[in-house]
Structure formats: structure tokens, C-alpha cells
Length: 435
Ligand code: UGA
Image 1 (cartoon, rainbow, N blue to C red):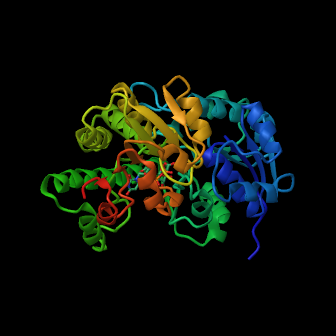
Image 2: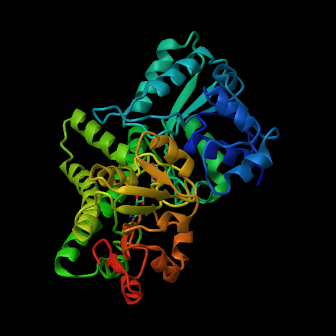
Image 3: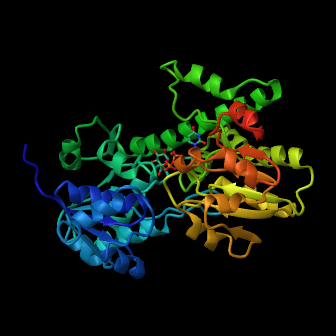
């Protein structure tokens, strides 16, 4: 089957925008990826990526200066394209709402540069009814009566698996208001051969809110169960395994631990609570999801304190800082609160992460922490070894060597990565989360 090459502009070169631009370029379309950060664009022009994402650099290198170009000129990108994806940041404001300033700025730029029909697609995670606002803004600021459509096409990719998810998503959601918009989007995604769910724009926006909130609810649910397991000596991993085999429940996102972090779940839950309230509904369930999640970090710290008694002057080694493996992203990582709590009690901290060390150094630059050059260097002489991210390389560690290096053989496993019994047999004291 032959598909038309489309002229696509992706505004925003973050985790969503850059992956989306590289994917469409690889599918044979002509893509301009825009960012207002000139430094970032200059680096991208040399294929230097602003973050670590497995497989993405190869994709950029393969397509750059052929199907894929980077530019800081939003006006130029819009004028040259027929399809515009808005993938700019929507960071949280102090009241929990999403800051939509960048989305509005792009909508006005589209209005200014509406030289022919354009399909404007919101890709960023936005509150329901943002599509309508984008439409109103373009109508308000356009200088002629050139036609356009607005659509919603929420992204479901996971950091660390973004390229894989982008080419093989479980489903594509398109929120559309015209047959023309639906046809263009169906054509664009047809080569992926995955189910396409078409709906109105508000429904598509709610699908994104509901999907992330449901996944976060699953995590908080199992974390609440893990607390009961702790209180009764039961094993949350067995509980999750047996629950997950029920096809109606499913086994994913039932991994108990220090809870969810990252730039998606924490802010998206807040934003859904906020917009629900604004619309007149109190989404109490989600408030509880957030509370349980926050409590998991405090619970982990308490478990360590219970064993070490006094933290002042003790050396705690922390392996894993990013909010999850295969990313260097430190945003809203559970490690931040846990490290702060240890510091508050006067512990000495030695930190190591295989990918996020650079970002963590910036984040903790005013904090009394040490970064180790390697895994074993971090552990040397520590009174407690904490695992806060389940990096694959940690699973291959030599625990006999570790025991000799530690001043006190206490392991606190915030992600339930290890078999506690095996470690106990090796002479460690082991703390898990609900097991
Ligand atoms: C999440 C969603 O999974 C994506 O579908 C969505 O597109 C994305 O948010 C977004 O809205 O942009 P992501 O934040 O990359 O993706 O990471 P996840 O793999 O979902 O993990 C989120 C957090 O939950 C991590 O801190 C992880 O450690 C934690 N988690 C996950 C658990 O604590 N337990 C689990 O069982 C699963």
C-alpha cells in the first residue's frame, strides 16, 4: 500500500515531541521539529539528544537532514507544514492545574501563519476541553478565513520504552470533529496496523486522563495492600502474582514499592483532580491514590530508621536515583524525598545511578551528598544500602563482595528487586516493601 508523504511540524522536542518527530520521519514523512530553546536545537542538529532514551539517537541519526530537520523558527515550521503536532510542556502550577501558556502561544502562532488548511493536533497531555480552547484561539487570532481542524491525539508512550511504544502502541486515540481530520489521522497511523479509536475531542482528552489515573490507582492499590502484608507477615509479591493472573485484573502495574514518580503520573493525577473539581466533581479516589503514593516514601524511610535507630553520622548508600530504569529523568523521582528525609536526620549519603548522575548532580548541588564513581565505590563502608530504582545491572551485583564492603549488612529494597530469603541466607538483614 502506498501512503502519501505528509508535511509534519512537531512543536516541542521533549520526550513526546522528539520521539513523535523521529517516528514520523522514519515512516517516510517530511518532519520539522521545533523548539524555542536554541541551544537544544543546535545540539539536536548535531544529533546530540537532550535526554537519554534507548534507541532514539539511532533513529534521529538515521533520518536527520533527510526526512527530519530541527529548527527554532515556529513560524517557518507552521507555514511549511500541513499537519502540526503540539507537543510542548504543560508543567504543573502550585494549585495542581496545568500551565497551558506554551500551548496557547503555539495556537496563536498557528493563527498568524495559517497560509493553507492545517490539521492542528494536541499531543501534549492537557486537561479536557483544551482542544476547544485551541480552536477558539486560532479563530480569534487568524487573519483570514483559511480552514483548519483541531484534533486530539494523546500519547501513551513510556519513558525508557518510548521508541518501542511509538511504533507498536496498544492503540491510537484520535479525537476529531471533521471527516477530513479523521481521514488524515487514520492515513497517518494506518501503517502501524494497530486499533484506532476515534471519538470527539473531549472524549479523547478524558481517555488520557483516565488511563494514567487508572495505572496510578493500580500502583497505589497494591502499595496499600503491601502495608497490610507488612502488618501480617504476608507476601505482596505472591498476592500481586495471583491477582494478576485473573485476566480481568492483569499483572502489570502491580509492583509494590516506593511508589510512582516522573513527569507524568504525579502531575497528571493533580491535573485530573483539579479539572474534576473545576467541573463540579470531587474525585476523592484520586486524592487517596496520591496520599498513598506519598506515604510509601515516608514508610520506606521509617523502615530504615527502625533498623538503624539513629541516622546521624551513619553512611547510607543509595543505588538508583531516576524515577524508573532506562531513563536519566529525575523529575518527581521518589529518591528525592527519601534522600531529603535521610539528610534531615543527619545521615551521610553516597549516591550512584547508571544514567541520571548528571541530572541528579544539578538537582542536589546544594545538598550534602556524595556521588560515587561506580556501584561498589558507593557501597564501601555503608551502614545501609538502599535500592530506589530497579536498574538491570543492579540485579547482577555480587552480594558476597558487597557484604565485605559494607560496615553493616543492611539492605533496603525500595523496588522489591531481590529475593529477601536468599539475601538473608548470605547474612544480610533485608527490608522489602510488603514482603
Ligand atoms: C506513564 C504511562 O505509563 C504512559 O502510558 C504515559 O504515556 C506517560 O506516563 C505519559 O503520560 O507521558 P512513564 O511516566 O514513562 O509513563 O512511566 P511508567 O512506566 O508508567 O512508570 C511510572 C512510575 O510508576 C515509575 O516511577 C514506576 O517506577 C512506577 N511504577 C510502575 C510502580 O511503582 N509500580 C508499577 O507496578 C509500575
